[in-house]
Image (cartoon, rainbow, N blue to C red; front, side, top):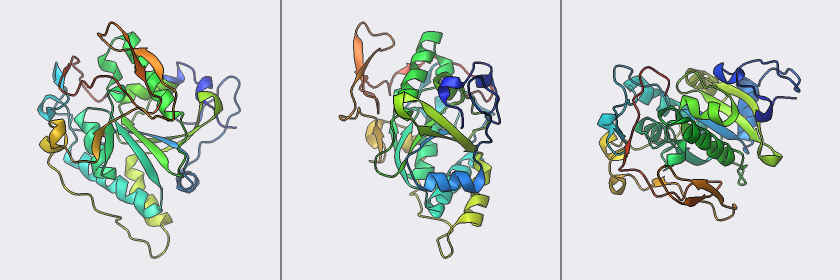
Length: 289
């Protein structure tokens, strides 16, 4: 039996995912490599993807404006190449990808575009460390609710965000930029941790495990300038959209930051007034985001 999020302790949340001994659970080696790829090919999983590698010679300004990449720490050239390679590897391996939800920060939007050619931009996946404790916990709760809804079409759902968000949601800290952390949604809103794959391992897995005769590169994603991709909403590609609440899911009520009234929030997305053009007041140094 693998552990579920209800067993994760606060101490575990500060560690990279790995073999863990937890009260009430049985030690089990997480799935790796071929086993994890085979599980993903069947669909039905929630994949948490920390944005690809960033340029640490820059940092998020205070304040950050979501539609102005110049105010943010963005993907490095290596990070862009890795995101592209990740998407090609998943397509080559036949891993079905359905919904892709991203943080409004450009490093997440760009990761989603380069890997998958699409993304639903949700403020609910914004960087949790740049908020107060109450808002960080709310973001974590919202993320867990979104991830706990199992895909119904045989695909896997992708959630692209930052380091602290997953820790707030389930107590797991995705240490490396670009790491994919895989969960199986369970009954009762819980998530079963299955394993993780660092971004640099995907090309080797595709080369080793791809069916004979399959394309080695997968489909190509159109090149879009960062200023367009992450700029004004109206200028973005049509597959980069704002996340909407799913009608098939009962809404929950949360309090919007700075709002005086409760705002309904669907389990699959947000109906909050978009903050795309509002500044995000945080200053983050290093690679915590």
